[in-house]
Length: 427
Ligand code: GDP
Ligand code: IMO
Ligand code: MG
Image 1: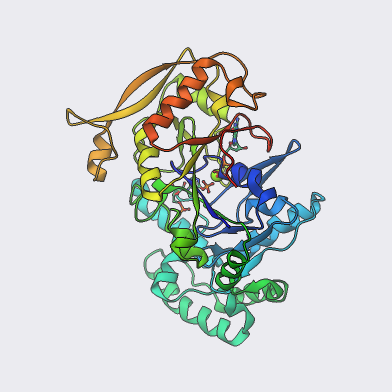
Image 2: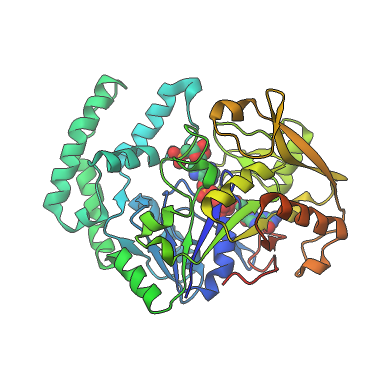
């Protein structure tokens, strides 16, 4: 029975949260495998909006066990704020299980993230400032603090002290900041230890056993292909592997356990933070997309950069992730344009290319080549089948499908859980 991965095919905020939630009633486990609270996944249920940062989007579905995989970096204060907030809103949810191997984000990671960005000035990445990069750096540097360290106060203290010995040199000598006291960090982390202890598990074992028993496991990607540290627009990327293969390392399952990879693609394009974006709009159309699509970040509230659909972006993601299906979101936001430009190729130094360029230099010089498709004016938010869409809208979807090389199996026509068109069942 299936292991399913959901990934973003653009630069994030494609609607992964909504898609995960929509499948949630048919899955047994919902697993976050990469990133941390840099993610902001919106789920709208019965008109109530939830902005999830660390909690898997399956959390709002009864009978779905949520798991934080080893590949996630966990800020426990955010994690518990989110859980407590749901309780305060009267939503009854089960505490997610957390991999003993997941790394922790501590206050020195978020501080380092912010000072590094400030120091970089014009060369900044435009991070979310949540300590993601520094926490992953420590992991790779082998000085990270893991969830299992919370189970043993002595080990925890020794590791925090060792990490800070190095970090405090950096704070003082490079950033001219006061050192951070290890005791404060240790006490802050220990304050969560007893609450988290019953939920710390060998998540890799648990998930493999679940798959052996024929359960359905949904791996919920955060960020997106083009923010991947290996495959994205480096250095304007996040510090983890959000791609589908990241579900194997970030949750501990073998590649053959993945039966389906669902690429989430917005019907246009957005990006937050710095970095190349060939179809970016700086005119009134860009503002209209932002306003109609509500394109403001869930985590930082930043206005998202907006542009037309770029088929090269999504086609590359589909290829590298082995996408079996695409879920096209926010098609309703394109209602009202007489014609809709779609980027079908790039002009790079006078030569036309119809696929993603090899180098960042080429990407930075790429000029979009547009094909203009007829638009539609009818409200499509109530459509629940492909046949109910206006003919030109159907043609838009079909043309995108041709360009991105993977079948479009679902379409989002509004933010609500039920505001979708299913073309091929995904679970
Ligand atoms: P994620 O990070 O990929 O989960 O996406 P975000 O939640 O950051 O951003 C997607 C935004 O679009 C959220 O506000 C969603 O509620 C909204 N959304 C998702 N799907 C649709 C859709 O099909 N139509 C409309 N209008 N909004 C959608
Ligand atoms: P979801 O899961 C959009 C971007 C940041 C920045 C870069 C690095 O909601 O799609 P980081 O804090 O990760 O070191 O920032 O990555 N970024 C996202 N952009 N959606 C996200 O998550 C993002 N997570 C990180 O804006 O450009
Ligand atoms: Mg988001």
